[in-house]
Length: 344
Ligand code: NAP
Ligand code: G4F
Image 1 (cartoon, rainbow, N blue to C red):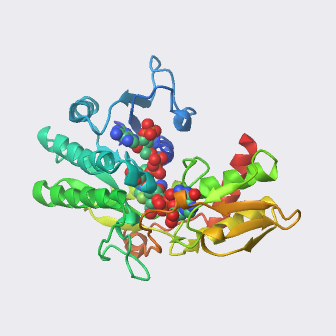
Image 2 (image 1 turned 90 degrees about the vertical axis):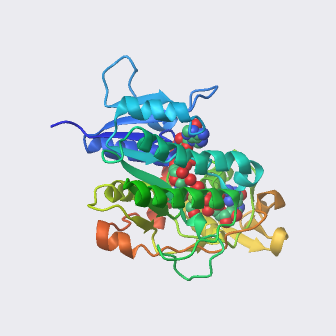
Image 3 (image 1 turned 60 degrees about the vertical axis):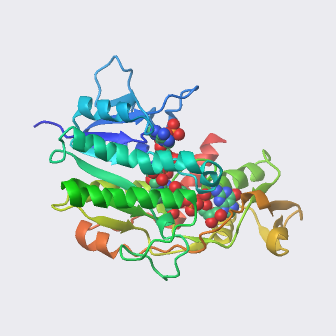
């Protein structure tokens, strides 16, 4: 039987790596798009990558979401059955510093892929997945967010992803493209980027515990996030494209914790006894054993406007995709700690 072909934009990222491994296990041929960088940055997929001169079901090409011609050429060349658009300037805080670039990649990049599918007359052949985000709900006041919750984005990143969401809906309705939006809540893993808060906390606390770092500096301790594991979430992406009809799906755990609760859980598992003192920007965590300050808050890590509360209701995914998260927040933290200890 002919293998299904997947083309993944954002293959070098956290989700790109987990999705590639899932699709290879399902016997797909996986093509991935990587950006040119001055130093090789394929660490997350090095374990499945073979020399380009050898035969392999995992092949990488250069391309960029800001470059329409590279997108068109790659789709033409690879003739995929499924395209996963995971590429993005994905850091919320950074999007306040590079708003125009974030919109170019995240919004127009999505449009460029959809236009390429249309212009190549591949609307009937290709199924398209767009990596949407709970950041689109932003400053919502709803207790749980689902597919019907209105968007109220609170960053250039969130706004750019709203464009990507609606243009995906628009191309589905206008040109009958099988296009799905996954609206994914935060998902983490041992290979999460170092500047996202979960990785930063676990890496920082382990380094402190083993004497490689003195302090950890954080921002807002009181925002709440619904954290799942990337391995579970890429399975939902794939399931969306295996349905009879395209649809949009919220993917989350239905549980939410503050950053401070995440610190407390992680510190306990790492074997650091901490005590919080002070208020606001002066809030600190002390090491109970030697009274040294381990964690401080710094204004630089606070955002111009914050998304205070996210909690997903993934009932549609449960019913239609038969998807629900398997990995708990405690198992996620355990796995991240184990990985960090191995790399210490
Ligand atoms: P990530 O680790 O930051 O990966 C982003 C990927 O996009 C990387 O491969 C990056 O390449 C690539 N990329 C960035 N700019 C590009 C450009 N101009 N052209 C081509 N590729 C580009 O993000 P992730 O956590 O895997 O998330 C995957 C997707 O899901 C993103 O779209 C993100 O916005 C979205 N999302 C993530 C979460 C989450 O909690 N993780 C939740 C909801 C939605 P480099 O490696 O070269 O930087
Ligand atoms: O880990 P974060 O940077 O993730 P954020 O902003 O929720 O965005 C992530 O999840 C989204 C899904 O909802 C994705 F779409 C997006 O691509 C990305 O993957 O921050 C989480 C929370 C925020 O409230 C932030 O203010 O942690 C707070 N925080 C506190 N101190 C910090 C820090 N965040 C970071 N990055 N660094 C800190 O020192």
